[in-house]
Amino acid sequence: MNGFVSVLLFCAATGVSGFSVTTQNNNVQVKENQEADLTCSYSADFGTDPRLEWKFKDNKGSQTYVYYDKTITDPYASRATLYSGSSLRISKVTRADNGTYKCEVSGNKQFGEVSVMLTVLVAPSVPICNIPTSVTTGNPATLVCHDPIGSPAPTYRWYKDNTLLPSDPSKNSNFRNATYRLDEAKGTLEFVKASPADNGEYYCEAFNIAGPAQKCRAVRMEVRDLNTGGIVAGVIVALLIVALLIVGVWFAKKKGYLDSKFSAVSLNPFSSFFCSLQIKLM
Image 1 (tube, rainbow, N blue to C red):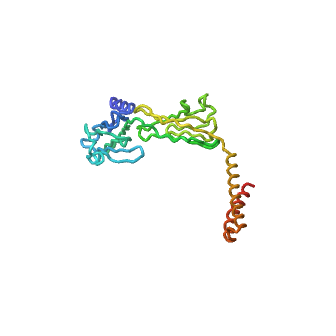
Image 2 (image 1 turned 90 degrees about the vertical axis):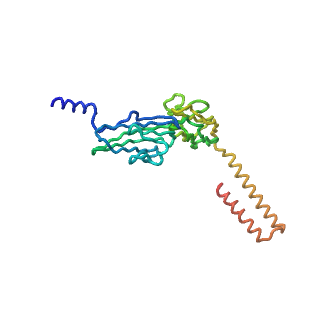
Image 3 (image 1 turned 60 degrees about the vertical axis):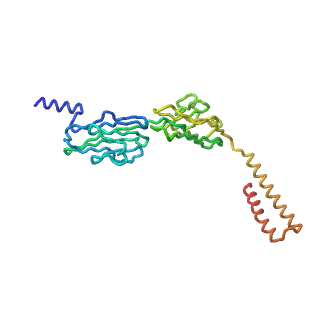
């Protein structure tokens, strides 16, 4: 009796119990178009003919069966097989196979499961970068970098004038006055209020564990003050043009080139527009 109690205490301490479902590797990483082995084994407690199922959930949360009712389902029938009784082998994996595979076993009124994460390795491609070339001082500016090819999803680094920008500028003495926000997972570099100090050449680099990093072409971003002088000059020129048109119509009417009905219709829009400009300027 004491020996039986000791065994129970040992099992409780070590976590060993019946009806176990295990895997040799719960984090499988293989290159694209290669073969992936997802191992699953279970204890004899489930009986001689337990129910076995393999389910797949992709990174977006969509779930489907891979092995159900002792049959490989249609989407996998041409490239998946069951081996060693309960393990799953998938040939020529693609990025669409990224996700979590769950091996579920039930029998003798018991249930057990184990999950295996599959990561298909694809090196990054040259990322697509959206970098504005001109920004007005004090306005926000967002630089975007994205690589749709790499797997696992790449992490992004931003460079200014060939200098790596730290993800948290407040922790770097050389960038404490910087006002940008960098999201390494999303690939965005955001300036809440751009300033002339943010002038420079920017480019982004995408990298993951599958292969060498790739970068986009550098683009220069210029931060300029609002050209109020040019706007005022443009308004003055517009007013002069309107004034000349009004004088021209008046002169044509005086010389008899236009009848009174045409001149009234022609003058009214110009007069209204001219008056509205005067009111706005005042």
